[in-house]
Length: 256
Image (cartoon, rainbow, N blue to C red; front, top):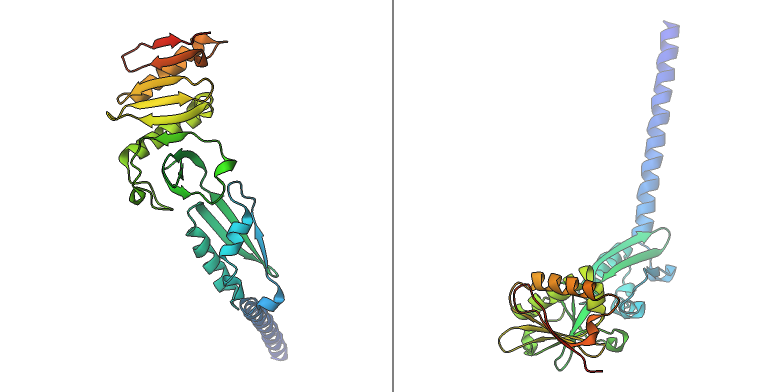
């Protein structure tokens, strides 16, 4: 009987010790959470931005300066994410808090691939999202889009352009940039005629390339094959190339 009581007391002590340990851990977690959520501005919260390529980080820093005056770090992270997401140049953003007092902000920016030739000029990214000129226009050498609808209502900042023809040509430019980089890099202008035919103008000479308004993909492939046949010469040696007719290229050599 004494042996049983002794074992019983030992088990009780073991259970009590385990309960005390769990209680201590729970209290520590609660205390740490309370400290973290109650972190004040006086504790000097550090904002750490990821590297950006399109706009300087100070542009995004200015967006959240007022938010940093709030007392709750959890509120700060949520509010910062929401505020930065609203910027037209931001494609995605991730905001996270890190012990003891750092907020990290990772931004994926929209990259302009063309300029709409209107007043004021606007950038468009590969999906047709409208990016306003924020003083960074001279940092990018991009093809200009001419003879498109210039109504300001068709270009809402941070949203897709509303012109069907603009979106179609942006899709073409995006395809060229990915699959025919040499041509995209040499583009000075993409024009839309009154009959909705597409004309490309190269920066080199310039060379005018008439694509028409149908089967644009197949005509780009014809142009690509034609340029391969010219190697080591280039299509810049021609004043114009007309690819509006099936499986042929009408070309005019540039006068020397």
